[in-house]
Length: 136
Length: 356
Image 1 (tube, rainbow over the protein chains, first blue to last red):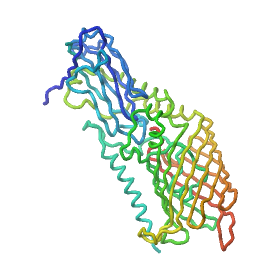
Image 2: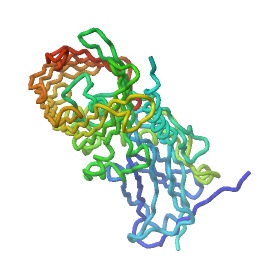
Image 3: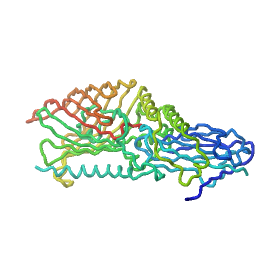
Image 4: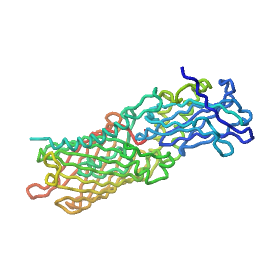
């Protein structure tokens, strides 16, 4: 059985909030529910919805101060589908930033998707992933 | 009697379409557990499927006043034409939207909306059509046409905010699922799950499409095509006859979902007659499962006004039966006189509509 794959996200323990950006490229829709989990990895401390929308990008500031995020988890369920019958490809990405700069992350959270179901068919592809914060 | 000449042209068209379809079918989501290729024909409704540019090049569309609305990814049309002499001839046309079929991309909905060139490319339709020749059974008329759409008031992607309801459905869908725990988030793999049904999503798309149909506004498309008569099975300078070319600008104004006025200006050339013009206007009443239209065009070649009418019925989602009755100038024994023509067409639009 392969080991777990923990992705770490380094943040500064300053007052500047961590910004979560959901990006989607292509004639697709991507919308998500994000969760901040306690360090037990199960207790939800904060949650919010986010949709990439027409521009393909949307931001949300994490309410919890960065210094309180150490060893906490940010996880997400992104639901993706295509809105154009001829384009079933797209890219979805979650970018975490602080002070306007992307936080160092051990593995970029980006997915190149093909064969996406069409929204009109009522089906989606979920992306359920997450990272663990570590303060510098 | 031989029908061999039909094979190469249809084969070429089928090969091109099959190539694109294969390219689609070969795609898969990076997750191995996801269904790799969704058949296009599983999807729902369609609306305003435009006439085949290939048939338009050959002048055999059931309606002479063509639509200006958005292209569909792949459309197959079967033509049945009955002349006043009672003879029937058939034809087939395959229309593809090559931009996406061969890898073209649009960055996002906003880019589609704001970039006219990109939107026109995304709505460009390439068409291959053949029609059985009425007199020479060893010959076929062929047409290759291209149609580019510049505006379509009913294109849901051009109206800001309509797709927010789709986002809301997706968010609801993610919110009802259990929170992603650290254990799940760190499981081996890409994190991409299996395709699943999202309650309310299809309805939200339909709602957005319905809302787009309520907008009033212009649609406009330009087309160009060349065609001819192919004798024998080999394409060569000697085997090509009755060459023709057409360019046209078609457009219309829709008042909401049900009424549309159509206009067309067309130039046509053939090996026997120099360039001549055709202009026409039409009106359509559109309903969910049927459309009815009247039209009047002026043919500069015969210098005649040619009235006509057409009806379209949705047989099953994605399949429309079209029937058009028009008058055309026909020359028999040196005498040119208007003749009635009944043209029927069966259009199969696998994708259902321009937003699915």
